[in-house]
Length: 262
Image (cartoon, rainbow, N blue to C red; front, side):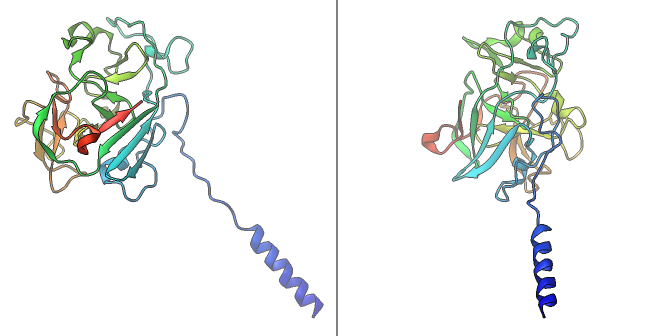
């Protein structure tokens, strides 16, 4: 009898020892800014499918009330001269590039994107600063250079290989198509506007062609992989306004629209 009791005790201890605590890891969750990452937007099952495409290594994405919140440090997931010499992700300027005096600096963005976007009664102009966020957490800026909405002509030479650069406080951003995201497929979802509507690469997912029916904001309503029933969305273009020419949807927290904090 004593032997049976002893055997049962040993079996119980073995069962307890065999239990493990599962830990998650992401091979791309590095701090050097080079991983392309795998999009899952965390493990929040409430996220609309488009938001699951955000890159975990660079963003924390979750639902809060009527918003999807995207938390990000705003640093790019690729090399750039703007990391500064000596940084592991520094690369030399490309031919013809004029490097501006700023350096990429970690930010503390929280983008509040409407969970269910809808068209506003009137179009809103995009301001200087962040007007949306890419899947890597890098902000989108509009088609102007500050401080007086000058054309981008004088800044284009300062763009790195992936069409980004930092401003005076070190916020790296894209005015144009974020080509590091579209290298393999230029029709993919690349991010979201502050008004909640998605932003895609320059071509359509349905046929790989450039859309011919874009409005003055760079948008139209069409079917996409993430929105099989169709949705209004913006496309990157090689001409003004490049990304988002104005907000079709609601912006500003007072009216339930999108906004951000930093």
